[in-house]
Length: 338
Ligand SMILES: C[S@@+](CC[C@H](N)C(=O)[O-])C[C@H]1O[C@@H](n2cnc3c(N)ncnc32)[C@H](O)[C@@H]1O
Image 1 (cartoon, rainbow, N blue to C red):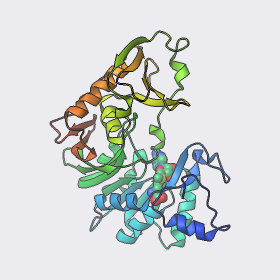
Image 2 (image 1 turned 90 degrees about the vertical axis):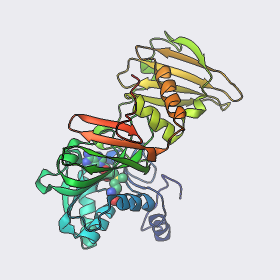
Image 3 (image 1 turned 90 degrees about the horizontal axis):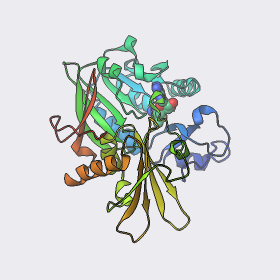
């Protein structure tokens, strides 16, 4: 099944069941519900996650014998049903920011015989009335783990959440909550979830950065680092952790070449790197107080020098003051470039 293809349960039940049993994400809402009908909208805003992702996250959550669980992102209600089946619905709280999605999930869960506590609102706040929790699972991604999830967990509790920098690259992190108010743990595998609503990225168009026609006031240079090297999910993750408040955009041309644009979210700086096949040197232009190509190149070199580590070598520590991403152990924090 192609992503974004519409399937109507009543018009084509066979295709619907096939989709339901496929290991793909099924978008169930576009554009916060503003878009409806058979054609795809612009941005998927609620979905049923692929079964392998759901089960690998539940395995990481390790719910066997666990008491109370908070889920952020009810979506269709499927994960809440699985948790309710395992733990008893009385031990499950599921929070959904979208009112209609939450109402539909509640009806669906009820038909399946499950009545977990269903909260409508911003799951970043957790659910203090239901705390303390033994497990917290987010099924939308974050760039910052809301501290409420740590504060509302019991010491020894586990938080499983997709985490990724604004630049791109994302992986599921499994944090164990300590009795010192901190939570720490490793990334367990790649993911690509929709963002927690209040942490969605602000991404102005490239033209908003230019003071005139490109290259405007940009300083020109060249690099031997191919923009092709920067595109993989682990590379983007490693770059994004080191280069916060920045994001890439690709402008493709008919002949197959492209420009990699780099922008900062403060709308002060931009850079371009042009990729053409068969070249060993690539033209770079940079403008603004942040030298974004310089930051990205240094971040990529750091990652390359360490053997291009995958997600499993990275970890995250969350404290009341913020977060720190580390490589191999918490005493090796990943450096920041800006
Ligand atoms: C990938 S879907 C969840 C999948 C779901 N667990 C299931 O079993 O179908 C992500 C959901 O997170 C919700 N969401 C986004 N931001 C949220 C927030 N701040 N609080 C609660 N839910 C949120 C979205 O509306 C969406 O329904």
